[in-house]
Image (cartoon, one colour):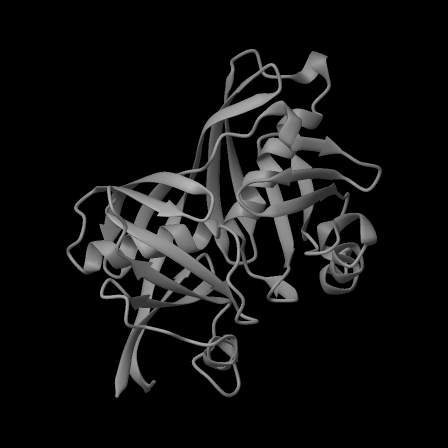
Length: 270
């Protein structure tokens, strides 16, 4: 029996996508990890199943490269929207469900295999932002510790990220770690991702956390006069935009915008 897959990436964060609307795809952790292996498998940062979901256009189930089901993946969210569009499930707008609840999405444009998409992230209450000695911890669907640095090129992302991930204060599941170099409304972000146990070219929930952390960190006399903010985010894999409203420490109407691109499709043995 053959199993069809599609490969997509969002600013270099790459995924294996499968249409599981019939619910007949059952993959073990070992199988998923093998498919994501860059030397012995297809190669990807994670695997995403598109499922049927009552009341929604589709459901998203995300697995990290280690084979374990995981929390929300922002870049993967854009990729599954592009995949759903290619299957004819949606036109330009979608509502889908993920592990953290409902998400909205809008396709803004398409050029060849690349689709520009924005997805709505979950609101973040003031209580969801923790200012720690090591950085700012925010759960944007996945947990992230955001650290501001002067020279991002000098950071050993893997070594430092792994050490923080393993810190007992983030036990038992660890945390993603984002290193951020600031320049007003332009941020450069590099991310160590748990589950991948490595630096990825981009992380959607990570750049979202970076923008919110920067906004929450701003001293009062430098806070924007308008409650609306939009940040251009540079990653190793490309550029993203994060916009939101901020009121008394709470963040609402958070949107992550960027590309999702089809790479190739194929079949594997089950």
